[in-house]
Image (cartoon, rainbow, N blue to C red; front, side, top):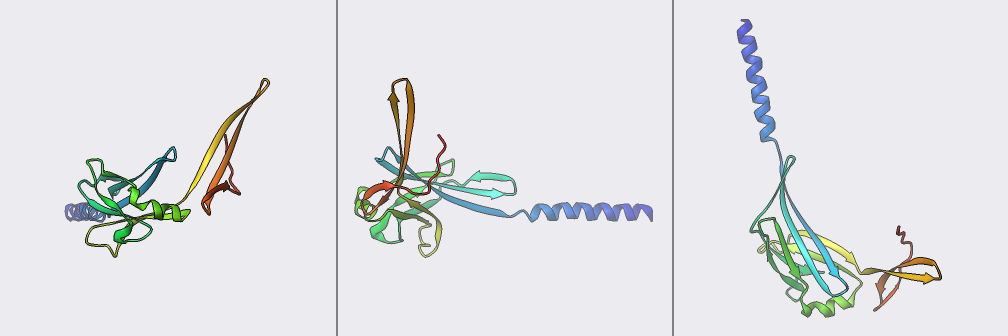
Amino acid sequence: MKNNFVLLILVLLVQQAFAQKDSVVSKEIISLKYYNENGGMQYLVLENKLKTGQKIEPLRNKTFQLFLDSVAASNRIGSVTTDNEGKAKSFLPPELKGSWDASAQHKFLAVVPGKEDEIATELDITKAKITADTVSSGEARSIIVQASKYENGEWIPAADVEMKV
């Protein structure tokens, strides 16, 4: 009788352990990052990963289409496929310069081909820049830092910005 009770408890514990392993939920993570190097070269990096419990692994060979502001043929940035690290890179094409210059705020969109009505991920940006300059006055040296935002076709000082130099 005692052996049957121990055996029953052991079976229940093993079953509980297997049930917990099956309940680990996998979640696909898709993220976009925008880069602007020295006000010239602009590009996007898409990252696609699968998170299962505490483990994160890259998703390879997945294709996405990238758009500026809306999913329309005229706003298409390009099509990208993730590499072995789950990353894909795309440069902003010159054809979108008019749309880019028309607004200070933009939204980058990534969609899976064939599912254009579903946005896989999006990234909102506001055009801004930080300028830093060094000034020497005798033996004293200073750093001047200014944050600017792009508004109505010109760069103006940005309000309510805190910086630590």
